[in-house]
Amino acid sequence: NAGVTQTPKFQVLKTGQSMTLQCAQDMNHNSMYWYRQDPGMGLRLIYYSASEGTTDKGEVPNGYNVSRLNKREFSLRLESAAPSQTSVYFCASSEGPPRVSYEQYFGPGTRLTVT
Amino acid sequence: AQRVTQPEKLLSVFKGAPVELKCNYSYSGSPELFWYVQYSRQRLQLLLRHISRESIKGFTADLNKGETSFHLKKPFAQEEDSAMYYCALYNQGGKLIFGQGTELSVKP
Image (cartoon, rainbow over all chains, first blue to last red; front, side, top):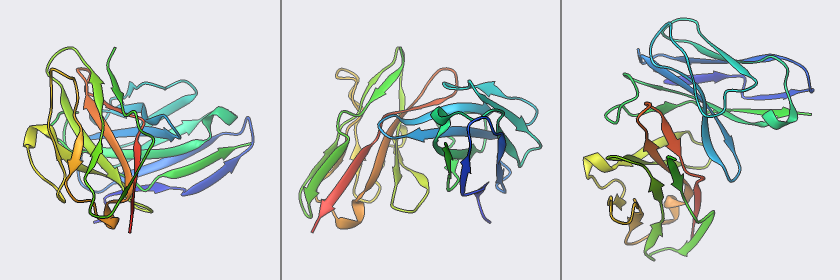
């Protein structure tokens, strides 16, 4: 039981390049999330998916797109990377709709640098 | 606006000393609050939630609606408590709003 896995662990991009961050969970969770973590700003929600087939914007969605490929997988795409997107990206999942009784489980993170 | 504020970026204490990590929130309605922790080279994980009124690893947190606070406390800090701590608020839209985080350093 790996929990939440993310690939890649590290990535360096040049401005304007595109890439997709992959996330998968093996806990049969319904909800999945993408956050970015920046120094002094905590974690900010980019997008989330309350259930398979649905996605919704979070606090900072601009410059990103997501795909809930199936119940297990939730990918984050940067179409044209910008230096402002340099960050650590975390994927998370929870058992049900975002409710207090459901803990969010986090992946190990992807450290992305855009030059 | 819904907001979580952790005023201290870094809190440094000696082993055995009491520790209090501050968290203030802004929310209209009944808040649901959490503390998450990230140890070095480990994943972010749930430490405790106010609704459970539990004590985890010696930490407790009491919701004070009058002061809109949810401070995390431990009477005797241990070196293994050194980590990044995040206070988080569950909002009406079903999202977690995180504070900026406080790095706790417990010195021997």
